[in-house]
Amino acid sequence: MNRVDLTPATADLLRELAAVHGPLMFHQSGGCCDGSSPMCYPVGMFRTGGADILLGELHVDGLDPIEFYMSRSQYEYWKYTHLTVDVVQGRGSGFSVEAPTGKRFLIRSRMLDDAELAEFDLLPASTVPVPGA
Image (cartoon, rainbow, N blue to C red):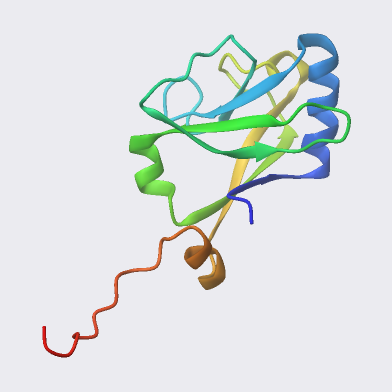
C-alpha cells in the first residue's frame, strides 16, 4: 500500500520535467511560498533533514523512483490521509520546476480506510479493558 500516488497526467508531466531537469523529488509544502502545494525539485536542489520524513516513492515508467517528503510537523496533521499528486492548468507561484509550464501540481487527499490504517500502524489503541489490569 502506498501513502502517496499520482495521476496519469502527473506521470506525463514528470517525464517532461525529468527530460529537462534530471531526477526529481517532491516536498509537500507547509504553507509557505505556494500554499500547501507539492513542490517538485531536481534531486539535490532541496535539502531534507531530520525534520522531514520520506512519505513514499512515486513510480513513473522510464524514471527513477521519485521520493516524496513531508515535514514531520505537517505529517501530524496529514497522517490519516492518502495523498494523490495531480496536475492542473494554472501557474503556481513557488520554486517548483513545473512553474514555467503553465501547469501546477496539487494534492488531492482522502481519509485512509481501515486496511490502510492497520497497514500504516495508525489504528487507535484499544479502549477495551484488559482483564486483571
